[in-house]
Image (cartoon, rainbow, N blue to C red; front, side):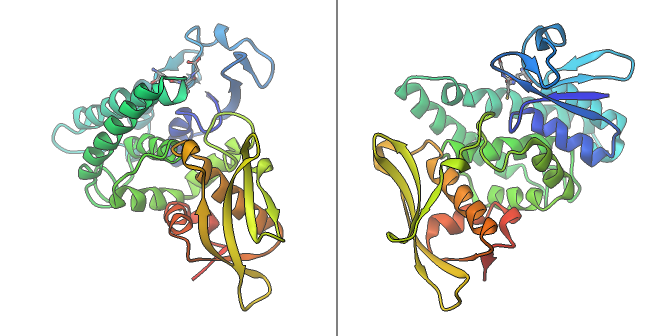
Length: 297
Ligand SMILES: N[C@@H](CCC(=O)N[C@@H](CS)C(=O)NCC(=O)O)C(=O)O
């Protein structure tokens, strides 16, 4: 079995679900712009629709569409599906909601919608995530055990960070819980998404430290920067983060999230730790257990 995926894209849901399932599978990245796979194949010959996920089954059938792929995984690996009255129908109901109402709702934000379309998309998505929060039933959507729908919801929550969409606290806690799961960490590591949710090149490379100004900064455009300001802490290897600033004209583009991520990565590389007094940095960390080794307190 082989999963075709793009880093950080919706196929991350299938990637996590297969790892949670304990399935034996290969994974191959696809460049969704050039339609070439990592090994140089023409992806259109694998999935003529040109998008991920595509799952090559052991009998050489190709399965596409997140709803179908995730439903198939749950059917093969029953610990990822919920039992009980209407169980499969309820799971499909949730998968369809995530696909049609959340996933598709991001289109204007990913694909150059007008400012009005983007604003409308943010508003609609915020309402839909509020609804999704009401569907949590314990730690996960269908109780205290994970299902494939949780994997898909998790990926959508990662995208809300990129586009500055506020979500209820219950979903932040859910995102943190998901982030603590070894399968999620393994999928993220393999897809190397630590850099960005953008399905493309690393943005962390753009974050740098400006020690004289006591800040980490991420250049944006024409000299504009986003910055995470700090002061020294009592311990030499600790910094206290006090304020994060993104010029208002660049708000809602996930720049602060990239900055926070890049800052944590640079701290990790230089064996330093962060004390978070800045509300934005605290908010970012509340969803990212992968930085637990860097944050003090
Ligand atoms: N209807 C498809 C949509 C999948 C989809 O939107 N995939 C995106 C990545 S998240 C993609 O590969 N886009 C590239 C393209 O459409 O050319 C599904 O639900 O699986």
